Length: 296
Image (cartoon, rainbow, N blue to C red; front, side):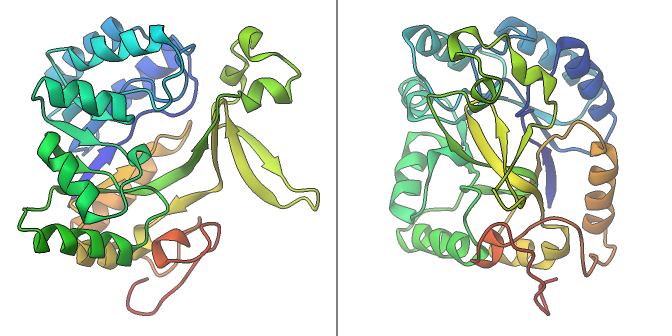
């Protein structure tokens, strides 16, 4: 089992990003994802600076570096930037939009299929494999059973399954919108948002009228309120065919999270209970915490 560090989904400034990746480069990670996936207005790093960071990390880390693409393309300028990203000539690309898939397939370049591609069956997965996909990150709402069924379908179609990377830790990215909910929460228009997302390094909590934690708002992205944590489900992750576990960055405490997963993959018995939700993994409502004998 490998450990990957997903792209930073929140808006951090340049110094925060630089310090974060400097710390992560010394940790036991097999894959590190770079790049902006949520909003093109977030420009702490330009594409050239992301590539420069990639070169720096290659010198001090053994991890594979992957450049993640934007998830929601809304303008011609974003499409042009996406084309440049796919043509970077240096790093493997994670495609989070079918436009990226098309660009990469036309260039016959291998790519990672990100969770926003919404692949739920073996036939779709096979088409992406034909286009050059080598690693699949299932949608975050997929259960262990669904992932296993999709992989079985691929085998029945006579194909080898790709690497499978499961979103194992972090706020779950659930939906994307043309509207910016963080700007709306501050009564700002999207076109004059003043980059207010930077005030919420772990997103903006949203509660129901009854006071229940419901979502986390991150610009145009709606995320889970709770952090998902599949550490107690490690045996089930292995059984379903996962090759990599994605740990999605949070503002604080990532070194401790990585250390906990590292201990388990080196043979330590997984904990019976951990904080966070895992409902989707068990085919239940995502916000639930399921404890199942034999799996947790």
